[in-house]
Amino acid sequence: MKKGRFGVSLTAIAAIAFLFTALRQPQSVLLVAGFALLAEKDEWLNRQVLQALLLTIAYYLAAMVLDWIFGGISKFFGYFGVYIIQNTMAQVNTFFGDLVYIVLIVFTVIALIKVIGGKDAGLPFISKLVVSHIPVQPASPPVEQPPVQQAEVETEAQNAVKEESYNLQSNCSSCGAPLGQESRFCTQCGAKNE
Image (tube, rainbow, N blue to C red; front, side, top):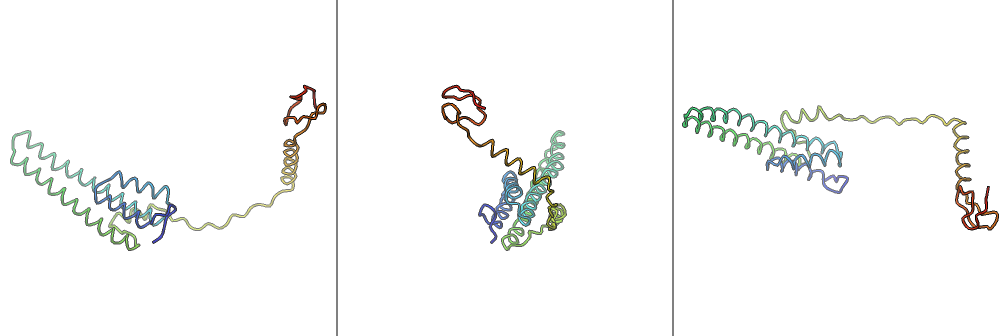
């Protein structure tokens, strides 16, 4: 198993992302994805955690749409006092919500089996979105440095001489006490130095 920059197995990080997806923990999936994308920066791991994140988003979007449809119909009939249809729509909403969760679990288990085997999760539709949006950077040829001009070399040499003379410490001409780098007067005897 390939280890990441922090000594954690990349397979384990991807598996954790999918486990949090199955447990319906979107904040945890987001944290793992953020860690993988920002800290580890491994191409394979990035694809896996993005698939886990997109699967989580797809689940919550599907659950939200079902709740809007069937929950809205249920509330509509509740306003008019048709409680039989209201209860039926609430049960249909629960049934489809459970069905969407089962689909989430199936996709997560399939992804976990593939990821633990070191392969791409390959989730339908989602893997195509992830692969098309993660650019693969081709190896760039080495950049040749332009030759150093003679004037630049002379300027660097002059700067080095100035810096060296600036860093030299001098002594007082009257008492011999050490002076600061740009001191004009001695701190011991007060004599003027140039």
